Image (cartoon, rainbow, N blue to C red):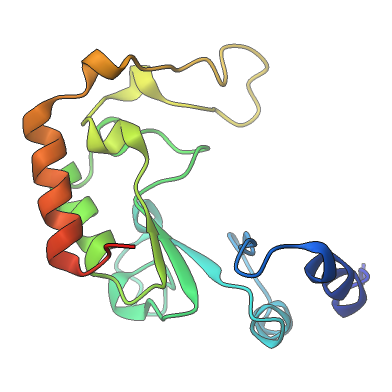
Length: 157
């Protein structure tokens, strides 16, 4: 069903801070939606956990563009360690080296935590949004490594 499209986005963008919105364009997205996102200057999403052998997959690092936000995983995914298909350090480095305008690395990935630190499981009514951390849990060596990767990638803002 056709939605309000441009009219709705224009109203939202009128009251939103510049650069404050990201289009959650996950799943099967028609070209018309990608065009509308770009027309309004909204970055789309690239989730490295969704990358695969399909050369046309927009989540594959070689298909990232500057008008994207890259994530290792999202709040709806398992942590990268729990997902377990690629080493978390490799995923973080890949995200930071992406041409995407912004890279988001969940703290659980920085801390290299497993599935017990997952934030949300879609379709499950209980046990979501309960993960917390204490500052004492942050490992100095992991934070130093992460800081070096951020600095080395040029993402210092």
